[in-house]
Length: 109
Image 1 (cartoon, rainbow, N blue to C red):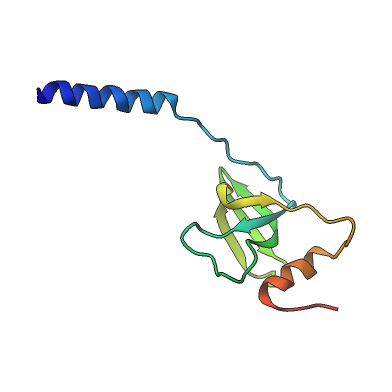
Image 2: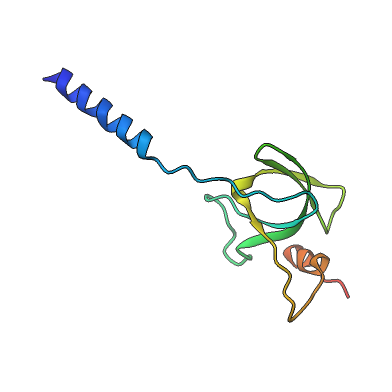
């Protein structure tokens, strides 16, 4: 009996692996602006759902090096799964640097 159970589990495992959906990582060109999602296990209650925008500096496979508008000397290395494209709002048209400053409760005039 145990052999049948093991064989059944192996068949289920193989079926799950072959039917698993492969989700492609988004691609962002160097120089584009992106937003960052918080990790699934951490997000402050009263903060925005996304941080940024950040500028893509370099790409290595699915890892992106990002530069902050608030502190240009600081670089972040993040996986593509945590990035979201940043789209400028043409109605309000605040520069990306002002939007980024609001993440740190800093305001630029």
